Length: 116
Image (cartoon, rainbow, N blue to C red; front, side, top):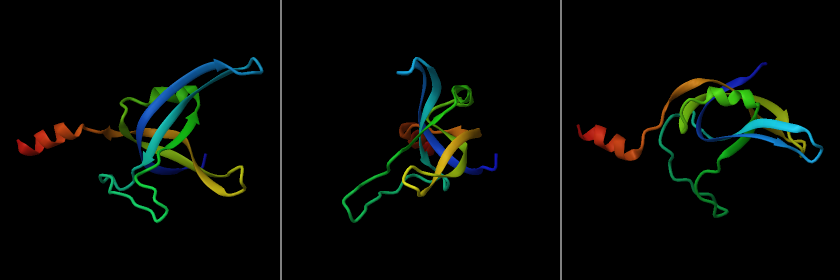
């Protein structure tokens, strides 16, 4: 695998194990995340079309990858590859996790630590 590494903030991991319409077992885990390369707090985001904030990314990974998520939310080293989307345009896709980098502390805890 020739993957690029990027830091991501994982906000949700949902494992699934179900039977599809063709009676096949489908297993995996859905990962919701934000790109977090600079490690800074999110700055307000405004666009000329009226959108505000940050859109999370979502990707399914193999069921076995669920074991790599120790703490969520948390910062992880994501492995990404460039693929061609259904519209023929290049897209970067999460293909795996290469380690846990750190926890995200609640704002109240961060504020209390700064006071002491």
